[in-house]
Image (cartoon, rainbow, N blue to C red; front, side):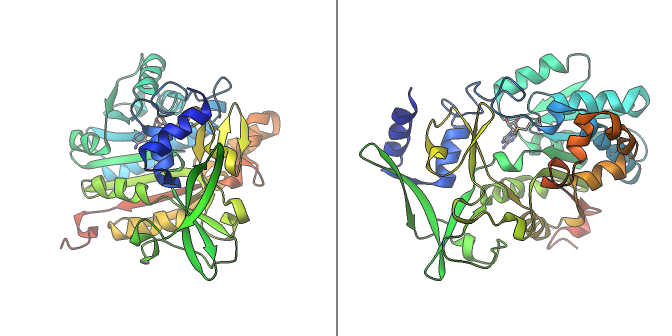
Length: 354
Ligand SMILES: C[S@@+](CC[C@H](N)C(=O)[O-])C[C@H]1O[C@@H](n2cnc3c(N)ncnc32)[C@H](O)[C@@H]1O
């Protein structure tokens, strides 16, 4: 279906207009037409976007060292569980499992939670020689892990739908998408979810015309399973920030990727289901939501800092390998990506649990 027809169809189903969050939910995750469900999403040079793990194993190596260190704290003896959420093409899992080596993999149960059946197939093909267990939800993976696990994700949160808010005449309004005849238009209306303005979200100072994104559906998703993590850690890697770096003015950070081209403004809403849609992640929100759910922030660092802490040899490798230099580069990927570690040391961290 051509982009305009798909858009008309999508908006007709929503009664003529949709919030950005609802638009993204359908365009990315609809079981029949969603970008992540139909096979449109292929990570790497032949897809619409590349991720750091699809370029180089540096991040996977650092994650493998992190896993081993935290395993000593969380489950020093016997079987232990790593849960990767949103495995994409399986590059991160493959390089992390290889990097752990036979010794590091001993006692390890490696779980992947993957929403896309097609990406799950791609992962199965890539990871055939390793013992990996697949799940539909973190809850089922945590059940298999007895509630004690090291959970991690790369570029997962940014693939969740987000609300886009615009500051106008001294207040935040929500951006909606509509069709006027053949023209795609945006309209501003009251926020669709009162929690957006309730203090649950870390909203910045408003400035006329400024737009921001809030990944509130991620909070609901996290809330559905975080209570089942009895002991362990959650490592979340994504592009974004926690302060002024999120201020991108009148288009906000919302964008589409189509064959490695970046689109902003109205073209973001063309071709629903055929291009990736994303926005920078507000890590101040993730921290706040984690605290609500009894997860303690352990650290928030740039990707560069994380890589050098857990894989110090990369500093030397960067001198001769341009791909390593790229993932470490502070004004580029090394600074654009953040790494948040949250932990649950015991059930006592859970709000309301003594
Ligand atoms: C942008 S890709 C990142 C892939 C991979 N982590 C990487 O770095 O190459 C996002 C991944 O998250 C998956 N995903 C999105 N929402 C999900 C959810 N709610 N549960 C599980 N997987 C999800 C997508 O299917 C895809 O595999």
